[in-house]
Each structure stands twice: as C-alpha cells, then as structure tokens.
Amino acid sequence: MTDFFRPPETECPWCGRGNVAWAGEWGGAANLFAARLLDRCTRRLIRLRLRCRVCHRTFPHVHALSRTVAGYHGCHRDFARDLVAGRVSLADWKASQNEYDWLGAGIYFWEHAPARAWQWAREHYGSDGAVVAVAVRLGRCLDLADTTFTALLRRAYEDTVRVYESSGARLPRNGGREFKLRKLDRLVVDRLTEITDPPGGVYYQTVRCPFEEGDPAYEGAMIKAQSHVQVAVRDKACIASRIFLVGSEGGDR
Image (tube, rainbow, N blue to C red):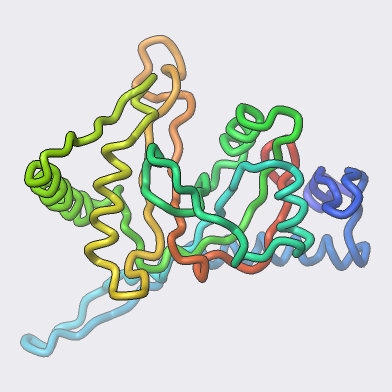
C-alpha cells in the first residue's frame, strides 16, 4: 500500500494500542481518496453573475460559503480517548474559563495546525498529551482578522473602560512573557460577546484570531516560529459530532 493510502499512525481509544488498519480494508483507503478529492473540489468559492436592477448590466461576483475549518485540540490522552469513543459527549466538553484566555470563554482549537496543537499538549501533559481533530463550522464568527470586527472590539474596550472607571476598579492588563497572559483581551472580547448575545442565547458562535508567537523563525525574521490562528467555539453546535485522534507526528497521511 502506497503512502497515499496508508492509514494514519494513531492509537485505538479503547485499548490504547497504535497498530491500526483500515476498517473494511480497501474501503477505508477509497474513502480517504474520496475525502481528499472532495476537499480539493470544495475549497473554491462559488462564482455568480449578478444583474443590476438600475442599469440592467450583469457582472461577476464571488460568494463565499460558510467556512468550515479543521480544528485541533490539545488535551490529556484519557480525555481524548473518551471523546473519540463517545464516552464523553459534546455536551460534556467544558469551555475554557481561564481569565487569561485570549479569545474569551470557549473551547479552543488550533486552526489547521496539528503540530502546534501537539506542542501545546506535550508542554501541558508531557507523555500523557494527545490531540483530537474536528470539523468546526465558524458560523457567525467574530473574526478578528477582519477590520469590521476589530472596530467593534475598540468600542467594546471603550465601554469596558467606562464601566471600570465608574466602579473605581482597576482595569486588568495583558502581560507575561510575550504577553501570553491576555487578561485585558479576554475581558474585552467577553464584553463584546455579552453585549451582542440575545437573552439566553449566543450570537457570535465562534471567535477567531491570528497570533504571532514564539521566537523569530530565523535571524532577522519578522515571522515567529509558533504563529498560528486560534478559534474559540462558544456554541457547541458548530463542532461536528465525529471526533478523531491525531497521530503524534502532528498530522494525518
């Protein structure tokens, strides 16, 4: 079997062993081929032609479908196995509530970055670290890579300052090595999402932001070695029900 059709190097969530084969032999390899082919076909945007009701001329327009990304989550291997085997449901998957979380409360994923997820898992859990992968539909996304949403963030910050000044409280700051403790960012993002949330519900289902992190990739580089895009999921309906283990090499084959 060629590398293209070779099963990923992963472990069984039931017994913990890593010697796996395709379920259904060649059927699994065929499904892998079909998945990769469909992925290439569906990456493109839909091209449309629109007609002006005033001048009646037509023109090309590009419409982007709702985005779905691959999310990688570093965690303890026992939790990873329980998720994959269905012993822990999506409903039981708790959102991170740390005061320094960069994008507010949510379940955090590294977007299309399995190797970075493995780095984080090893840093926090050592040899007991693991990574799971899911498809995340961004839905109504507070995308802080877009100036539309960073403008909203500015207004939320100004509102937060007024609240703290009126109460006499001290506004928290970002800090720590490379400003990894994002207490202020967490506060402002939570303020914005709370303002926009309807009573008893969630408006922004996900929060997304790119981050520069780590040492320069090389001498004089402006590119950081651990830069990534992170997604915090606020609405679990955006997480696909199928959850997969990711091999320790940091990706699938």
